[in-house]
Amino acid sequence: MSAAGLPRWLARALVVIGWLLTPLWAWGASFLGLWAGAHFAGPFSSPLAMLAPALLGAVLFGFITLWVWVRFMRRVPHLLSHHMAQRPSLEQPPIADH
Image (cartoon, rainbow, N blue to C red):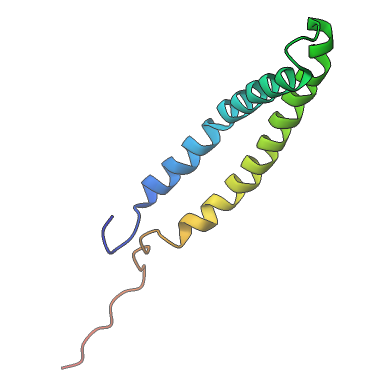
């Protein structure tokens, strides 16, 4: 990154990539919640007894992760704006008087 800042196309690409990662975050978090809920139910529980905590864990982990990620992604353009290169000025340079 140069002293001028982050190129605008890269900032936009980071925002797009972030939003495209949203389903992966939700899937990964729900899978982790599913595993944690089944693990919490205990190894000697029946499969039906593991189902309720596993589903509850998947829903909680998935929704909490989505909530946090969407709140973060809504702030990303503002956070990146502090690091982006300045837009070129549209004003004409002053004419020097001789």
